[in-house]
Image (cartoon, helix red, strand yellow):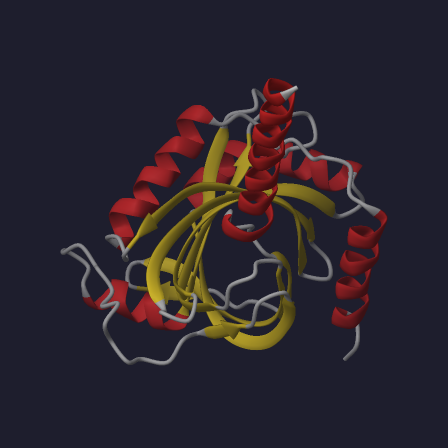
Length: 261
């Protein structure tokens, strides 16, 4: 009788530790929604066509740790007719954009010991709203490679398409404010006419202690996306599990709140 009880105890401990890791320790990318205010006007900035976006942001931190986001940068992709991804745009927060532009020829490594205020401070298990300025750079020469597929998808979706993105965030987590670099891959629903982006599904690609070199981390993730990922028929690159009823209500509430002027 001892052996079975020991086995069941071990199984219970393993199951309990797995649940603990899944629910308490394993970082979960946030649910997010973005809405751009006004019509973007492009101009030549540092040799590329860019524009400043005034953006309303909503996030839900589903983790049990406080997260202070100090910098964030995203690459936006779209697929060609064969499913391969093309980099079509890049978005970065205003402070990070200034860092990159002023250090064009050298690797940029943000100072994690700096007392510079965080871009966003997100409490654990809570929702967060903010407005901020981001810089969007479009790579029009690459957009042409996906242009016909992009137009066809917009027509089929009534102005709404699924768009893959990769992102790198520089955060400080927990009470000890430990610096961490997070790399994620996301599928997003883009509503072209309302300039509204809703996160559909995100996957954690990499998590490393400290703040890594910005360009190196972004380039590695960019190369992974263009060489290893392939879009499915919907335009996304991730498997989308069935969303729970509670999650559906939460995401619907996010979208409804964003419609309020």
